Image 1: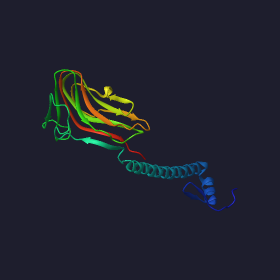
Image 2: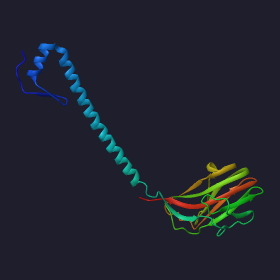
Image 3: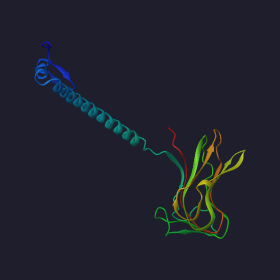
Image 4: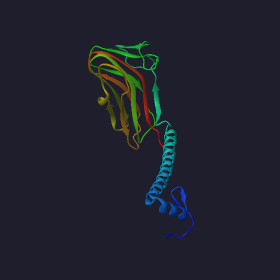
Length: 220
């Protein structure tokens, strides 16, 4: 015989020992098993709800972290939106096309009759070292027999002129607007006295260029 005792808790259910013993005596052990299973299931549901709430809070925290990380990841050193031919060095086969643009304000069109280096802009001394710099632009082509890619020439005092060419982001044939870029890494003390931004075209065809930028990563 079970002795009388204070109620005890199974999951969220409070069960009297005395009452339980009467059920067992009258109906056998089956009802006890059912009651215990029901209580345990309720406890599992409470735990699952608690875990779900914790997971939701974690996802929200991550979202806030992502929002906080939406600060600009790069600093613009120079920006040429190309709303005209102002500043563009090469002029042979080069024209301003107001009808084709990545931003609705026109672009520079090059009608290449063969391989050509299109000299776009020179920046001079930018007073910068110990960082990566990225030359980027928007490019588009039509009927291009060959490739077109970005070229950056970096002049370092006492060392000479070095280049970075975006072979891996070259455009070919007929293509819609793409966003190629090519990087150059400056060591500490390497302060360029001039940077030239060019476009290399290796065959006949039409190429448009727009939204030319030189940037560096934002420092913490």
